[in-house]
Image (cartoon, rainbow, N blue to C red; front, side, top):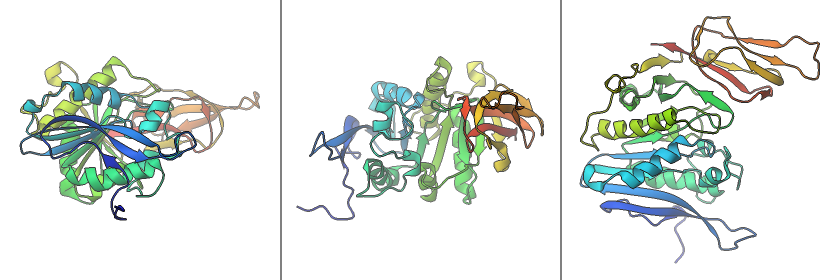
Length: 339
């Protein structure tokens, strides 16, 4: 029987309405030279018990960011359906081909998964994944947690974030959820380019979105994985899916969460030169307007003085490039202000 043109071409081996814990996969058609009738199998987990909210948790939206895949795989194995009231849908590697290749974008179609939404039924592999999530997973969700870090090219002070959106009621819910996550920083984030993001799709549906940036450099630390693991359980408790109280940082003997925001795009420092970047400040350094945050050296012209990049506003340096070879247009630094 021919599939209706409105139905996703992706199929799922998991019944999301079925109680218990179920490991399965999404089958994404992928005909190629090596496998004419082939498919990509993207792992997915559904854990359900009784009635209650649904939280969707995704990792590996970018394939070189590893806190999400690690923490979500550990939770998938450990979480007992009897512990919860409601449903948890876990996608540890949303861009599965990229995760397996260790690349930010998919090695199959070169697509950045976080610019692929709402997707396309008959598009590339990434577009079909986004279309299935958009049309079949997001409608089930009360909230979504998308776990990011800086990947190979960026480095961040660990934060959970929400966005400034027009729907103030939903924004306040997202703000409370990001704070409940319990990262060192809770940030009201302004995106440089929000079109095509899973974040935007969730928010346009009137649902709660929480994101993170938990480190970077293409690796993990014990601290960043622990932040992810604790934060996921805190969100499950915040949504009432787990019958426990979110663990505040103070209760764990840690400094309280810093509440920060980005008033405008001037919080970003962007390269206008190509060369070798020298960071002049470490993460978490206080910054005054006009302070030098870094400089670009020109190896083809050793006699030329470096181009100095300065903060456009006061605050704290919470993000910077992790790479040294810089091109015009590259992100160099992120400055946020205390609320």
